[in-house]
Amino acid sequence: MALEYLRKNDPTIAKLVHGELERQRNCIELIASENFISLPVMEAMGSVLSNKYAEGLPGARYYGGCHVVDDVETVAINRACELFGCKFANVQAHSGVSANIAAYLATVQPGDTVLGMSLAHGGHLSHGAGVNFSGMLYNVVHYGVSRETETIDMNTVEQLAKKFRPKMIIVGASSYPRTLDFAAFGRIAQEVGAYLLADIAHIAGLIAGGAHPSPLPFADICTSTTHKTLRGPRGGFLLSNDEELARRIDKAIFPGSQGGPLMHVIAAKAVSFAEALRPEFARYCEQILKNTQAIGRGMTDGGLRLVSGGSDNHLCLVDLTPASITGQEAERLLEGMGITANKNAIPFDTLSPNVASGLRVGTAAMTTRGFTEDESEQVGKLIAQAIFNRSDVVVAQKVRNAVMDLLAAHPLYPEL
Ligand SMILES: *Cc1c(COP(=O)(O)O)cnc(C)c1O
Image (cartoon, rainbow, N blue to C red; front, side, top):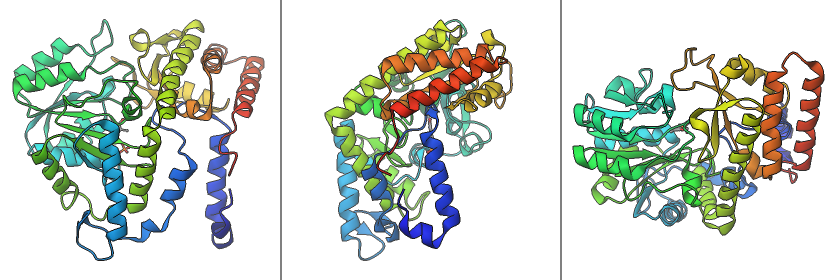
């Protein structure tokens, strides 16, 4: 990486940035929430737009000199609306959680009842976990997956909704490998008079690329990150088709919960939305689905079990109990072989979340890198081999060599 000025001015940080580039280059990245942004997205983020204060919205700012960034934000909003086929977007949320904070502020009052997916079954902290603002401020009731199918049982969601009469229902997850039935959630929300919030942080890219059904028009509000399958800069955004809610969302972001927007990141969001509007992006999403099937096949052929028996999206949740290894141990073992994945609780896990019986394996990043189905299946097999033969140094060396060959075939950021 050039880093011309940084190298001269701050070699300590320059060296660390380069070290992280090398780390990303030298491992197969399977963390389901990560991806590799394009160089145009990176350039927009590293631009002079970072210098500008622009509290407010395009055309209605609290500072002067905003005519250029007004255009940047308008382009980002219009592209988000085009990409997801909706009327309204707020692109200022600093992150996925910031978007969720704004969604709560726009819809419910502290103490109101909210129904969301439990963290232990694949939901997100911001869907009502006790240690999070959402669990502290709202009366959150949780649904999970059924023991038999390990998928969300819509009858249970309906029963809970009728019993607790939530003001808002949240659909969305961080480690759920199956299609979310947004239409069914929409019907239930309507029946009990609740807002429906669809948090598409993980699957936004798949939705944009036509590889997962869209929550619009069923959801009142849709929140998301930009940096997971959508492959944009680290950030968040909100969508809606309701004018009144749109007004409340804007106010909930500023002045409700944020100060000045990150205009350099908003520019990068605009660039990534344009990338996602291109036909290549739909092909990318198709390849993600194929690669997930392939890596899942590799792991199950190797003796591991997939929670719910498979995947419809970009991730597999692997049950490690057949191999008598914890998620924590597997994560560390694989990292030593150049494979990065994260330990994850499986539904009805008997271990604590920071030990966990599962592994979450996502294919968005390696698909960006150019991995094919054959290679993905091979990665799945390597994971199983490494885990089942963890005391065999010969196997460990073989896996490490195979990982290095795969990485060499798909160099990351060769331009840098
Ligand atoms: C990742 C994620 C978030 C949080 O995004 P951050 O940008 O880390 O704040 C919110 N909701 C879901 C479902 C997620 O998976």
